[in-house]
Amino acid sequence: MASQSTPQPKSIHEFVVKDARGNDVDLSTYKGKVLLIVNVASQCGLTNSNYTELTKLYEKYKDQGFEILAFPCNQFGKQEPGDNEQIVEFACTRFKAEFPIFDKVEVNGSSAAPIYKFLKSSKGGIFGDGIKWNFTKFLVDKEGNVVDRYAPTTAPSSIEKDIKKLLGVS
Image: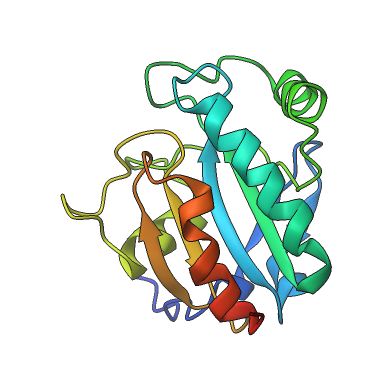
């Protein structure tokens, strides 16, 4: 098999992902926005606090150029067993989440979504590249560069100062 010499992506904006309805979403539409990319799950011990705080952050900064991109993942304790419709209904009904929820993906292993391979190669965790659990968060600047990575147990509210800095708001 010939090796492909496709250039490595340099920014999140080079990816096209599927939304929860299976439609293609070109992430270049998010140019100029600060992004928080999160692998989410509906049945995790961290679900309530994370969804609640993510929703608050989103409401507070969505009009200032902030976007949350949620990628459901069932790789950790099978805590996201539902289909996309159930996942979206859960997030939107129970937590009033208005941020986009994408197609369920794998974040680790050979079938990991390309965007997650990029995120992990940009910012490895303290225990290597692998995503350890639900609600690992990646902060992306307006140019599409991954600037930080936060552990699943890091409360979204504690990331607010970093988001504000990238948004240029005080």
